[in-house]
Length: 157
Image 1 (cartoon, rainbow, N blue to C red):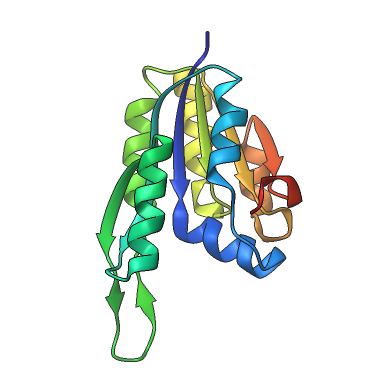
Image 2 (cartoon, rainbow, N blue to C red):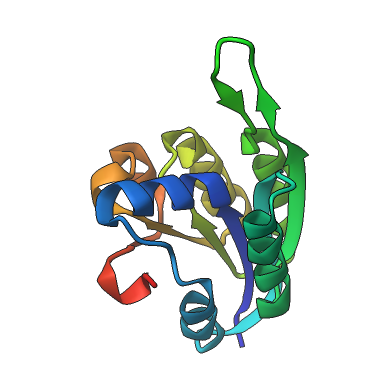
């Protein structure tokens, strides 16, 4: 049975599914699909720490499904922009996990992860699968992935 590790760039998935479809990603259905492919040995969702009830309920739902939720402070800048970037944290965790698993599944459309996937495929001989909204996923990430899965209607709430 394949050993699978899942890494979710929560902000990226939230904003891309909202922009493309006006809907939210169905994490429970995604989990069901992936669990049929092997043994999910780790699953981490990277999000920003927000104190509103909606976010707390969402994070609790992720934990109930089986995700470890890692939170980073949500920083509101004086110019009105916000920051809560997990790229480095995700990268470190993927590099560590790739040594002990068969499949890395990354949920993100961020092209910054293309070098990461290229590295783990070459160095660790793992399969690197990406789930992303096609119109909002960097071509370089799609090309770097062993398998690319489009997030479309069937993976939305």
